[in-house]
Length: 348
Length: 139
Image (tube, rainbow over all chains, first blue to last red; front, side, top):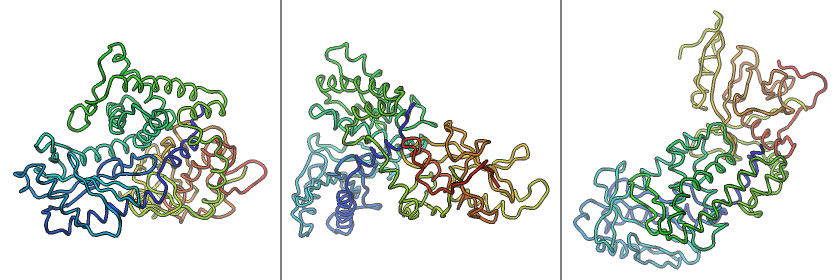
């Protein structure tokens, strides 16, 4: 079996955002968070704000075009209507002084900021913390005219724990499935969060064992399990699956249309068969060919020889290893990492 | 902690080795069984790699022996005949018993795993090698 770990590593690099997009995602939300924390008109409480969504969970692919922020407002706002709190937040954000051209608009549950020159979007969601940050928060819903339960921070934490328990395979698998969706489905796309939940449940229930397995094997098994779980719905002409929110238990895919579900299943069926063929291939070139059908020839490399050469240069120039064993060119700011002392491997 | 003795002989730096391993590579757990002192842990050189289950055997003033327990490793240019991993060229003096395993052996092992994966995919070993002739022997 060809597990092609470094081909997959290249694939993950190729579906990552370019540096300027990462830079925008780091700097713009940070400025808005500081602005809100320091603003006297909005009563916020410690810890003031948190990043949420795919950027915070590192499950993004392609360009990061939007980032979500949760702003913790004082519990005294609980007596106010969601519409009032959203309008109040909008007024404050409209006073944000910047040389950039920014559009501020109210949404159903958040205030949207569009930074035109950067083609970058921010969604700022006010949240009440009735029971502290470790528990459910309440977010406003303008249409329903009430505060709704949500648990994005708890979910982010749970996902991160699941990822650690599963040899860091959960988040990359989510990223691969999202990229697969973008590559195969122009219309009728399932939402990113639905895909994320599908993978979360499979791994959380232990349906896929990740120990000692490559990302190729884990992804292949996941596509098969997702198809198998939902195929019973295909025989009923009206039904679509219920996708449970990992924290609150409600169905997150309430608006999944039947034709969209069928399109998803057709693609998934094709993909799981290609993945199986790729994993069973006797020639590496054949395996690569099937993975390229799944992820696209522009993303899944035909060869990693150039990568091997650049890795060689990187290792000669000096690299670092973190506590999981991940090798990087720079010392990590967030965790312990140690430099790889110069040495030579023993002979050929 | 307190494991400063091996076969009745004092090895003053074992406690430091254990402590440093615990700080830098917490997945590695220290064991002492059947007269052998070793660590078991996992390493993953890139996020797409499998998590490799590793055994590092401490041998006092001799070079630690390193084995990959899982997944199976294919025959490659950097294995000793007993299937332990060749991490450095002993005549270079890059490792001595005075050095920390967490500072040398484990980072080299991660590098070895990355090189091994690329070697599997390309037959190119990207790490620096010391060519030699004859049978390979560990120190």
